[in-house]
Length: 89
Image 1 (cartoon, helix red, strand yellow):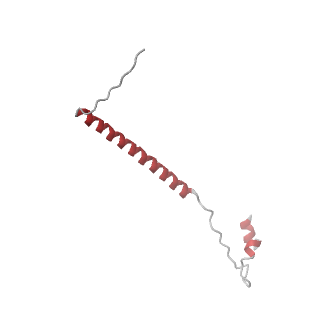
Image 2 (spheres, rainbow, N blue to C red):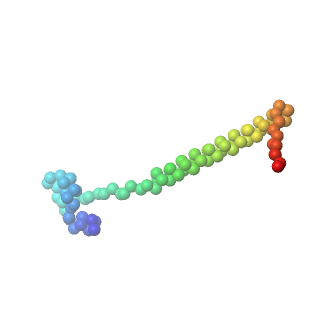
Image 3 (cartoon, rainbow, N blue to C red):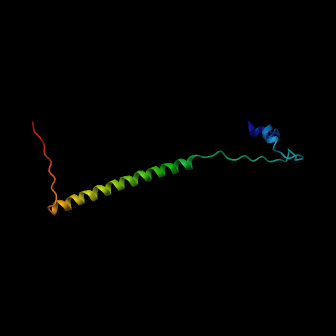
């Protein structure tokens, strides 16, 4: 395992080239960064998508309510009438 090799003092070649000349390899501490977590960007993407869908649904509902109210006001004032005709055979 890489951790066991580092504990035993075996340094990989790519890290060995980065050690400054004259450094004591037995007193050297090698720090590795944690692997990147993709949980944050995935959650952010899902929240943005859910928010966009919610906004679109609210806008569609508001447009529907405004259109229904406009048709009701115009119908009540006698300015427009809407009739559905079904043709029977």
